[in-house]
Length: 124
Image 1 (cartoon, rainbow, N blue to C red):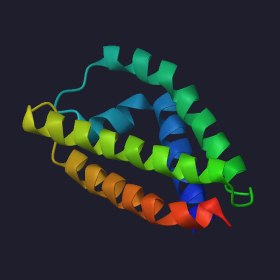
Image 2 (image 1 turned 120 degrees about the vertical axis):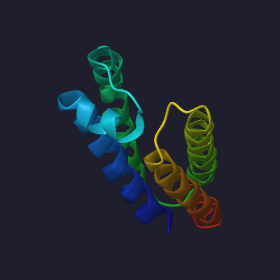
Image 3 (image 1 turned 90 degrees about the vertical axis):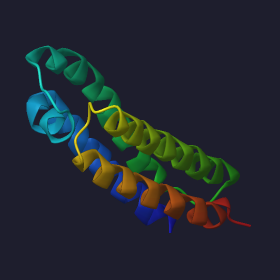
Image 4 (image 1 turned 120 degrees about the horizontal axis):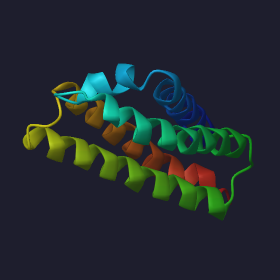
């Protein structure tokens, strides 16, 4: 199960990284109430990090079960929960649009799936 989840996460994170790199307004416009061109610089600067994480997840998806992969599932789940929480917080503050709640629900769903996959990632 973790292999599929890592591949899905790699594809999504890689796509977000690529969009932030070449067309940051396209992504930022989905969530921010107001967009300013000055937001492009930090987005484009952070994009390679996301692309790198996607690469790591892709490599990890082909690895056999191990205690390390089990821990990575746990860490990734909590990262997704934190990202979802920040989205909900910024929606409540009025700086993020309602679409961030859809993203947050997806992040919580993937996080929960990773928690369930943690056991299969551990192996024997």
